[in-house]
Image (cartoon, rainbow, N blue to C red):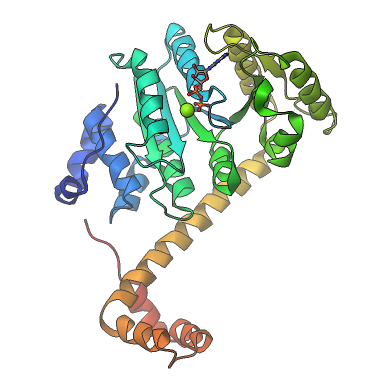
Length: 336
Ligand SMILES: Nc1nc2c(ncn2[C@@H]2O[C@H](COP(=O)(O)OP(=O)(O)O)[C@@H](O)[C@H]2O)c(=O)[nH]1
Ligand SMILES: [Mg+2]
């Protein structure tokens, strides 16, 4: 089922409690609204995430990355069908850093995925960056939490594999699939983009084209250069158009899940949770600082910094050392 994003104006009148109970009842409209609140970084959204957190941690989260046109959405479509056939519910978050919400690529994704439009066990949502720095990975993180907490068995995050944002989005995934194509040149490009470091599984899509086997061999060689203990990323040939190779991909995904289960790394899990925690604190404090500087005594300080009258280092130190003012700054909490 595909949801339209609600408009900002609707968001402001939303009642968080009503949304949360709708969410817990399995109402897709409430889910869609909460996702929009996350996208817009609406005030109070962290309260919502705090409330739903205990429901999270159950979904299988997959990342699918690779260049535009590699066939990611086509493969995602096939994976949806595969998981649905196994009676698992699937949510897809398509992250496209360049396109606005109605942009070509995202629209194309939606159209291609409409095969699953009427299936209530499928939910597809696009996320655009709207030019916000670092905002995409945060939004993606929180949206995956919502999809997971809502109860989808499988959450697939599709991103274009370029740049730091995409790499950081892939941190969310338990298993990352890097999709390559023969005409994408060669495996050197994969290595250059650092994709070999995040790949748990390589896919050579468009295996109907010239050079697919050569690329597979190169990737296998590259993957074999890594540490010889631990998981060895398999390289799977697929034809997105016909669905050939999808069974192999599904079984590789299953094998990686089993591997992760058998080799649970508690210190890495702990690192990830602590990182998440410090990120949330940093974001939250940063937002409170912005609100503090936007009005009252905060805006006076900001004005003096802006015109160069106040040394920013000194202003920062004085603010931090003034405990009463810090308390006022930190109490610049958001309200729904
Ligand atoms: N020849 C060929 N074309 C494919 C294959 N898989 C996907 N495509 C086509 O490649 C184009 C881009 O696919 P898409 O899934 O949108 O790529 P994305 O940008 O990575 O999501 C579409 O026209 C697909 O029909 C394949 O196995 N072989
Ligand atoms: Mg796509």
